[in-house]
Each structure stands twice: as structure tokens, then as C-alpha cells.
Length: 143
Image (cartoon, rainbow, N blue to C red; front, side, top):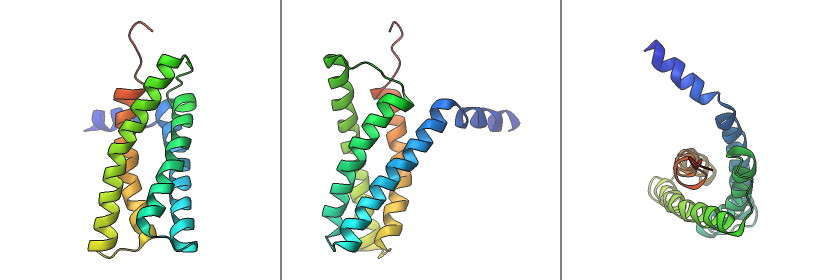
């Protein structure tokens, strides 16, 4: 058990993970903040508010993940396009989780919209890390 705790601690304190957590929190702030502005201030429906918040969060997240978290510095068209399309594709998967979770929490279980957004974002951040680390910004063996 002690070894497991050490391994988890080492993983959680790597520069990449700390960076991912910092930018993940900032992405969540963008996402929740835009959602709250659209839904609570402008009185838009949660669906449209969530979609707009997702778009802005994805743009912010792509740039910060590419440059600061996974340190993918290439802007060669082939590399950049692969990363962008892969990133947005993976985020479309997490958008499905996001929308389904919001529907479940708001429309079925009657949670508050902002609490629902925060709860769903925790799950989405985990999914996004795994997809980004394993599929999108993975290190090439000979690169």
C-alpha cells in the first residue's frame, strides 16, 4: 500500500501533471464562468450556455495543453492539424459526457445548474487528460 501511495504521489507531482491541473483549473474557470454568464446572467437555456462555454474552453485548453502542458512546440501544418483535429474530436466525446451529465443532473435530478456544471467538469477533466496524454500529444519514440 505504501508503494502505491508513493507511485500515485510521484505521478501527481510531476511537472506535467501539476501543469495540467493548473491549466485544467483555468479551463474549468473559463467553462464555468462562461456557462454562468450565459445561463444565470443572460438567462439562456443551459444547453446553449453549455455549448458556448465548451467552445471557449476547448480553444483555451488546446492552446495551453499544446504549449505548456504537453510541450508540443511544432506548428508544422501536418502536426498542428493532427493535434487540433484529434483534440477537438476527443473533446467532442467529452462534450457528449458533459451534455449527458448536465441533462441528468439538471433535468432529471434537479440539481442547481452551477453545481451540475462543476460536478460534470471534474469528470470531463479526467477524461480529457487521459485522451490528451494517450492519443493527442503523445511523445513519439523517434521524434
